[in-house]
Image 1 (cartoon, one colour):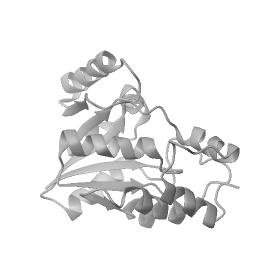
Image 2 (cartoon, rainbow, N blue to C red; image 1 turned 45 degrees about the vertical axis):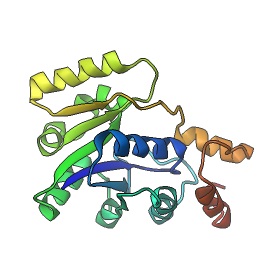
Image 3 (cartoon, rainbow, N blue to C red; image 1 turned 120 degrees about the vertical axis):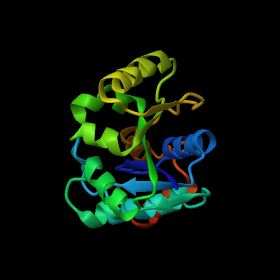
Length: 201
């Protein structure tokens, strides 16, 4: 089975995330996509007044649940602690030894892959990096970084070239919620959940 893994804090999951999953579906056509909200992000502190991992998991179910082939995984949340990708891949490989794994990352993550990712060489052994552009006109730079990983580390790297960048960040979404302007940023289901549960206040 070809399994794509799309992880992150999803704080909150927004339309940019949904757009990325749509690109994975259309260009990669995996058998399934695991949406993997982290427990504690290893590379950045969680923003003040962020909701619990359980709330972020529930919002992911609302945001992605209607997309065919998507499964929402609580594996990192149940494991607890800092959510290192290498630990997740080792766990998934043990659970699904016949699967071929594709790790979906943004273009900013590719440029810092060898310096910002814990045990990055082990990650490259266990999966194919699948890169989604987050900026306009960055494909040349992405291909240069991908070729470096292929040459130095025998990495498998795929760049999804037909993605229309959706310039949104979760920090911008959180500010937009304070301003009451979420149009074109959040799905209605997620926004209703945030209001009903009094999140991000």
